[in-house]
Length: 58
Image (tube, rainbow, N blue to C red):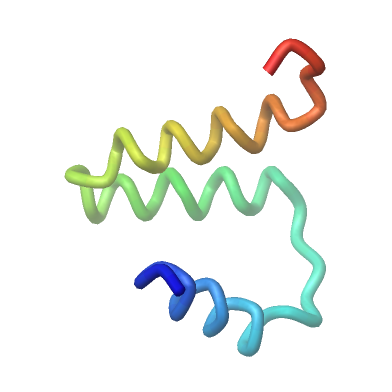
């Protein structure tokens, strides 16, 4: 188990039944980076990965 699994499990336990839009998620990611600029690159990588999930070239 990775350290990040704990946070993912907490997210699923607390908000797993909710539905959100990608617009809402994008806004939360922007807010997070504003508050924690050291995480700009990992958040950018996650956002790019999510955006390109359906790309067959990847």
